[in-house]
Length: 257
Length: 376
Image (tube, rainbow over all chains, first blue to last red; front, side, top):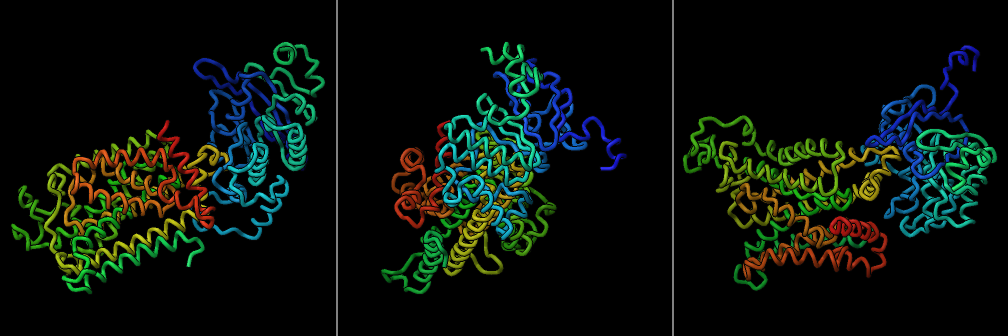
């Protein structure tokens, strides 16, 4: 990058995602209160906080499900996400994994991934689309990554809970997102599955930015990344997991209970 | 011919059955035991038109989760377009012998043909209209409804309101569609007299061919990537948005196509029954058509066809044997099927045969979500 370009970059210029004073209120209750947060390209960030701290609302704002009352959400150099709807934001390269795995149950594992592959989302295209060799190669890679090669033709409904979580992560990867938002990925998982999920997220983070919302402190520690603590819709503290766990304010509102 | 048995059986029954009946009607002497009388041919022709409507409903309800309770409106609109052509085809042979104006217009004192009746003297104009008019209404309705994310019970209610509103409108004489009496006394279609056995058999055969074509079209559509997106939208609409799909566009496409199929069904229906009037818009008709689909098996296409034929066979028999029982019977049938056969009649067979196993899955999930809708 040239000096001129660097000089021209604004506050948000080098960030991948920049939440600037975002406020969302529901019937007077402020779910987000002047929330500001910066995510660097390639970063993985863990977001923790007690129930009602605004974690899910934050994800809703980023993905276009909820429109903030005030504030901006800037993606990349200058795209304001608050002006776009969910499909437009998804097409920009922001993927979201929900807490409860939502895969398309009657469709096969293969078809779930096929529908998620980055590409044309137009009905006209979908009517005539045939699976291309490039798509086949990509699907094989994804099936291997999420360890579901032998299950490719099974309906997603037949998978175990943990397998559904992985399938959903596979679907997100298929979208080729720049940024992945992951809501409580290890809820309801066994210890072994939790560990494998941490590995999987670290693997994903090699090529993409990730935001993980999680309750499981052992899991957050295993990820070993910068942690943001939300409280009452705003950032309470930010730093390494050790710094966070020793922060008296954090202990008071969250860890102490 | 096709990898799955169900498709081959369905096509074989539709086309083979229609050909056989037509041959037994036209080629056997009237006294022969094998002779199929003309009224059976008209009945079968009617059932085939109902099956086209059922197929249209299954496409939107079974695959896109849109529980329409107003599809009879598209069927009736297609029927009215055909009725307008048949009316003008009467020409000067009407009671008032007006070469341009249909009898009912002369009767209410109109001097000129309204603009929207222009062109309907040509078959080549009226035929595409039987699909375009329903498509246009479906597009307008779907554009607003799907964009505003109206779904579930609310959508069902407004589809019901749509067909009811149209019924009230078509009852009015000054709409110019014959009011209460509708249109009838048709003489011929493209110059062929309607009151001959050969014409009835021909129309029945055409209905069978159209049904088979619509079935193949719907089958290809539901098996394409588009069809998979539809199933995804049906079961997890908001999830598809986060994958970058716009569910409203997908719903709109299948909704408009379904309205066109229903319209052509109505267009074939009118020359075979010889009348079209506003009662075709009655909300009860649309609900009954949904029951055909539920009985046959939602989300299976073949089930919709089977359900339409079987339930109407039952209706024909019961309304002549025990007319007062019919409404209770169809209500009871719906409850029974929902409770005991959530996957419909097709589901019974699919569960037993292994070859149809892969086919059965979407149907099973469809039935599950249907049961949920009804329970909730």
